Length: 279
Image 1 (cartoon, rainbow, N blue to C red):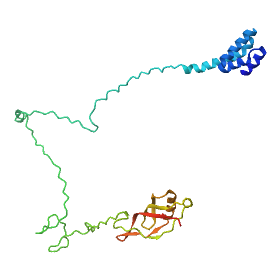
Image 2 (spheres, rainbow, N blue to C red):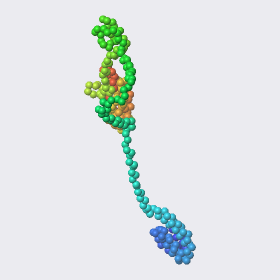
Image 3 (tube, rainbow, N blue to C red):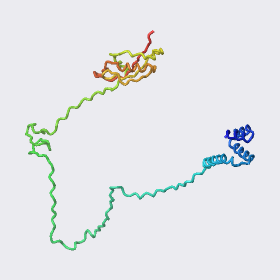
Image 4 (cartoon, rainbow, N blue to C red):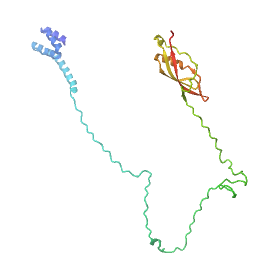
């Protein structure tokens, strides 16, 4: 746009610097003003047709893009109608429940009980009742004076044979002695003596800690297993550059198993590993 104005202003002998400065200040409005001024001065309005068409197209496209953004449409109101749930059906009797209806009572008057029958039957009906089933009673022999009622049969007078049933019940097992519960894990301290190390390799000094002249003690918490191996290592304190070397070394340590009542038990203890530089 500036190049077009400079070339066109020189051809029309217009002040180039003035129009260029005005276009730099106002941009598009100044360019439109220049086209209108130059067309009015020369009387040729066709020379301003193509630039004016481009400007109108850009303005129209910008208006179409910006118009929806500048206009704010309110959202339609939505009316929510509360739904009233239907009333629950009347509660009926619980499942499986039987409705017991009382039978109507019949009133018996004294006249009905003492009324004379209309006719006397010629035969008397006999009622036959079914015999009762026999009771399950153990076989028994003749009664013996001094015997226990209901005892097993087959006894001999004056003898203990036959008074005890043969193979009727197994003898009750003797009661087992309750085992004394032992604690699964014992913590070192008090009357519990720390486990004795039988294999204790020296940890390697980390090169970075040696270059930085870092020394000190690393405290670890470990579980001494029943076989004397070190388990569940966890760092409690110490320099971070020394903890890794301490854990790597203590994992290979071996201890003499701790005995409680003659049986090996697991012991929870704390292990101190000291790193010291040589003078």
